[in-house]
Amino acid sequence: MEEQGIDLLGQSSNSLREYLPELFSAVIVLCGCLPELPPAWQQRPLVEDWDIPDPTAGDLDSHRRARDLITGRIDVLLQQLTG
Image (cartoon, rainbow, N blue to C red):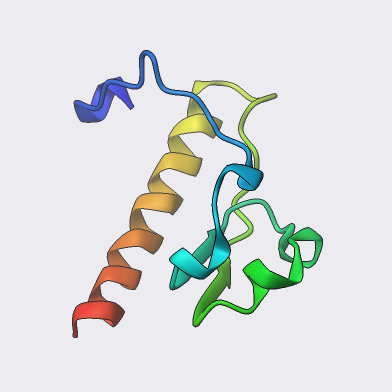
């Protein structure tokens, strides 16, 4: 992400239990694990599973591919939501 000018130092993931599903209108799952989400999260107005390959065991190029896939999907989603 640093290559894109985004500093992720100090960032961390949070547990889904820290959030109330009714406060969200969209849920995007990156890992192909949509069936494992609690039903309340699966029933939001917009739910998508992008199934992006997990780059953690890969090299730098696998991280770049994941980043670029996510960026492309975000671009399409933003066009859908604003278009």
